[in-house]
Length: 528
Image (cartoon, rainbow, N blue to C red; front, side, top):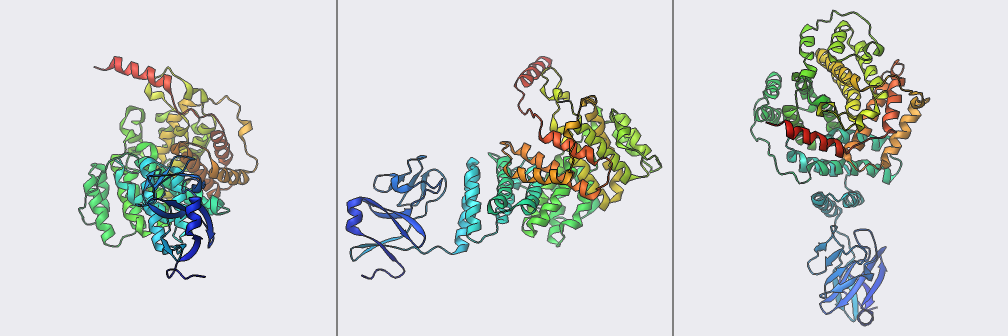
């Protein structure tokens, strides 16, 4: 057999290729398409990098531009550029010698392949190409890379593209990663959570400009940090975070001040405390390489969170907090809070202030009751003021906030008054949208743990097009699971699981066309 260039493999005779115009050859486990044109001879992976259709069936124009006829992706053999489409086509170096076509079939080093996959993953964010994200993370893993590098990179790429800081993508990422380890049974089900987490970050930052953080550095001062957040001084708070990181501080050393800042107000409808709790989990999962962007985007969210305790609906919170003295020795249950408005719920919470853990269970149970008995008719109304726009997420937040607040307050008990009174705000606010007379027996679950395991598995193929919906399903499920594991004999557990069951399997109206039109017209009429 005639020799060829060192490191090359003989794959076809030149005259055979000239006659056929194109050939498919199989070597070293690879299926390769060969093309002959006036521009030269080219070799590439026969499987289109988009969906794997055979490129040998494509059209070659201008001597070097190959079109895949299935979806019109176009590849320039000379430049290697993908002209239409996304993923990069694998090409093989060609040599012609002794009447034969020779190919270099050697693979690039794994580190190069992994770096290439991450670079391509970043490009997929620009047009929110979910399929390409999955393919590139699979390529990263195939190259021996850590799939979590995809999520670490996503955090770095997007954290400064969020004008008001952290979004649900972050706490959901922590839960997705937990799910991967808990119910991932094979390579596909272990890949799903990583892709979901990465794609959510891509979605939330899509078409967002750059919102840079200050590069200033200041000494870490927990009290000064909380004060900076209270003043909405992002630069000052971020500078102290940078100073803490420069001094080798880890997340656990910062969490108490973060939690205090989060619970200083009934903030962001509970988002702030949830974000602090889940950022700690995500920091543990992703490691030190992701800590700085996680903290920066969290701080920005704390700074810009709405302070709902300052609006009329929740003004009872401030006086109740001032009156909290742990003298209330009454043992309360979730039934005691049924139907109470915010003022009555916060007042009643004071009566149980001596027993924070017990009061936490009562309020969590009350939130579960509201979730189970949410009046579904309310989410479909079209004739109501904006202030009465409610839906499932208003009710799930009472559960996810209650779970996060409980975790934080067991670590930092001084924060129990704020957390518990804010839970009372959730309970009192949502009570107005409950139908306590409806029949809910069909939602009761006989085997809660089997139910939760089934629901976790089903989340791996959830089918929800909106990331915000999928992540709330996930976060609420994980919060309920945490509470059942923490207090397996709690009296309110049946309510928690039944409420979760109803939420997961009931109609969920997300787009309100007529209501929005009516409220917009009313708003315009009332404007000065």
